[in-house]
Length: 227
Image (tube, rainbow, N blue to C red; front, side, top):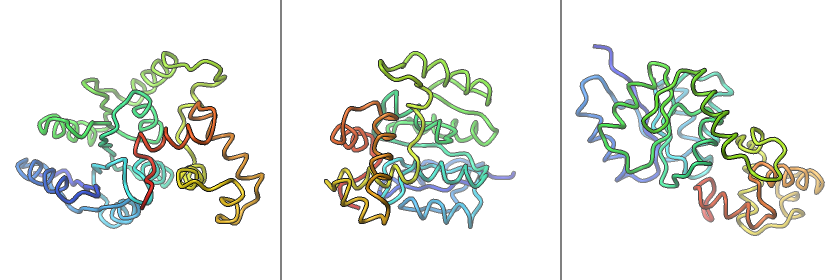
């Protein structure tokens, strides 16, 4: 029997151990590697070429959304099952728009997680109890974005798009209390460029100011006050 190869990435050793205990009971599943941060997730994916990743969203350094987006930009075909303790409707949209194959809260039943892994490696997408092909997922995303349409946002599809790597980097600095000028100096870019990125961030997150943007990101585990 050819086993499904899994890479587990979470910064909590005890949680990784729990996943290992669950998955090792399955004859058709093999954990080929473990990581504890976003960069390790990317490096280990390159080295091990797993069939699927179990990926925490709230990771040190690059978060799970950033990791997934980068892997998809590199044409990586590994399925990505995102786990999060920050479960809400908008987080689901961000996860799938970043390129995720499934989205599960961290209290998911072990049997459900095993089922999800088997489904995603076959090319399916799993949202709760719903299983989609690519066209079905796109239809679900379009419908969900339309239902979640925010007032005063002209393009809700754009509003739920993942932040770019630079926007996520700037948002990390915002949560640490840096001004636009300080961010510009830290990144070696112009003050106006930072302002332009901040405008895009506020639009995508549909928030009014920097403080709301920081709270939005922190509540969903995209950034950490200390890494």
